[in-house]
Length: 126
Image (cartoon, rainbow, N blue to C red):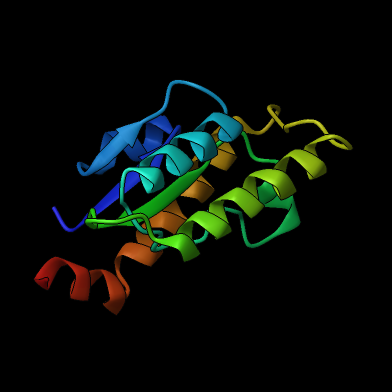
């Protein structure tokens, strides 16, 4: 296994093998990502959604790279900053649960698009 996906999206869990499933919120998923980075994993995908609308999704999937022998300070800085930004945004708006099925599918589609990119192929060859 050259990469690991951390997700709270059941649609992702049903289709992808290399993952840690979080029984909880998007915030709890980000916290799990942070914990894994402290264990030595590195970020491959950014932990926050690329659009403001997707930021309010109850589902989050993040790709981590292989486990390193030390903590990747750049990944740690990104995840810590992302958790802070996520909490700040969520103070002003609630998670949109009315469109759960749509958000599940969008998260899965975006993740699968990333997995089809050359960077993941390079990771698998390492």
